[in-house]
Image (cartoon, helix red, strand yellow):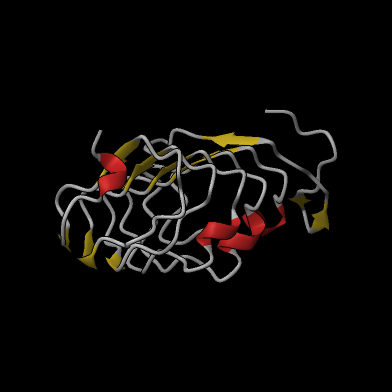
Length: 158
């Protein structure tokens, strides 16, 4: 973790910091039941791994816009009770997204164009598979243990 260009609050003083990669062992240091607001300032994150962070809230409104530059997001094994953000397709640099083992509901929205790996298994997603995922390079898709209906798209059948 490089903490150059850093801003932390220490004894009431605000100190600036910017992260490119955030990966923690949250069984040792969990976030608590929320996504901390200081993550909103981390717009340069390339890889975010907050799996198992004991997050049990909705994804904040700023989530998709804050991580526009992210290539990999790992947010598995939490209790996130929300829908997938409809503007997730705007994270065009995203190649890997793992949101498995949460409590996500609703339908699958259009996905980022560069996405090639998506794990949204073990949630409560429902409805038909989208007719256009929006991710032409999607080659690794895990949907099991949801309530999704419909047919496997010709996109995935070779």
